[in-house]
Length: 236
Image 1 (cartoon, rainbow, N blue to C red):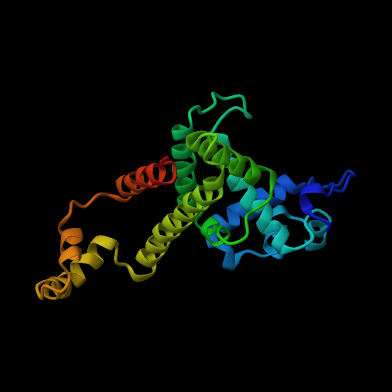
Image 2 (spheres, rainbow, N blue to C red; image 1 turned 135 degrees about the vertical axis):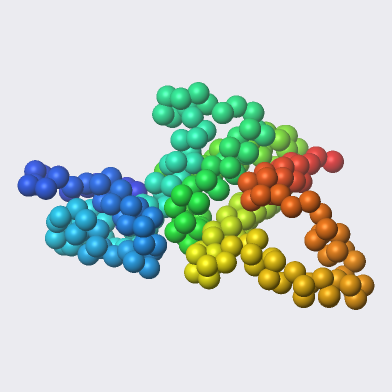
């Protein structure tokens, strides 16, 4: 199979300079502004002031473009770990896992379309593989030499939490914009109904949840990440 990660770019001098880096940067900017639904090869070409056919010499399909865009975001995540870019590397398995989690969330909030491209089959671009290796290496260090049989499960749980958490948060942000009602306003609008249901006594555990302290989104995420890290790295 001919994958874009191993396919060389066309060479030659043109009036308007173009390469995959410029194409991806333009596509990311368009997606940040209008989402993936508003992204097309034609719009990217217009942004770069070239014909759409010029793009296909560098990126054969829109699916390849989406792969490149996702890998650019993974590059931001990998960059936060340092080392490759000359910055100070994050050390210690706990710090690595926290950095990956927090940076994934930051990137998803900055590039909301990213949540539509993660989950399911893993991305195999070089930056995505860097993040995958860093995550697996950190978990392997935490589990120790006897934890090899748990490594795949731990990796799956950690990644599944990240995908679900960032998707939930981005979905809430989008719903807030679409409805004109943020989460606090929504909670207030359904508070009376929930109060009456809780008062029936059928939901004692949910009462405890609803009466608990409310944290902002960042505090909630950080707390959940700590629970996930402690859980997946627990050794018997």
